[in-house]
Length: 245
Image 1 (cartoon, rainbow, N blue to C red):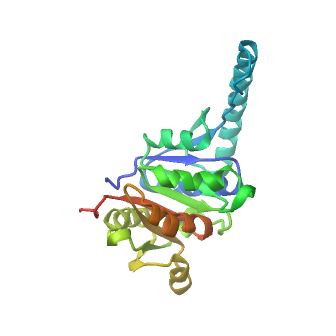
Image 2 (image 1 turned 135 degrees about the vertical axis):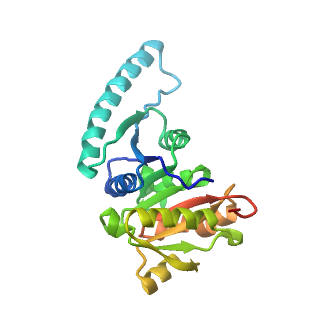
């Protein structure tokens, strides 16, 4: 996997978590010389019993809704980043839209609320679903974490131990991100980001994710971190069987 980042995709639902994700995504785009694309999913699903006339009316409504969403998306983007960006409104459901758009991106950035159960909104669960299938690095920004400027958010990174010990791509990308924003990566790897944060003052963590994802990694590492870790998490795909330089 190349650690070059030329295109950054930020998925937003107009929440506080999305605002933080967009600010950090914009800062990364500027620091790494990458283009920035901001995506919002606006799906209208017709029930199977709709008549042709109702389908046509719904499609007209969906077209108008997407046009309004695009205008709002541009305004929202300008509120949270000074970096030029492309605004994209997709009529797929959120997970499908993000995974589809990620095919042309080198890094996906999204917010999460980290809530459990029915109270969590779409980015709370979508982040976990994207984590299972995303083939490019994924930066998850938690709503409960501090709202920091990019340089402060990426001031001090830590690398989480990979499944099977592999974290080559993860460390390479972590160092690229840190260098771009004038930060640093703490030497060595850790197993518990929360403990490392208390001991070292780390502001973000880079996490290797196996390709393909294993159920053990998802249930014991990936999903618990998405739900409970307040600092930004950069998940980086590692090759099956261990990364090779």
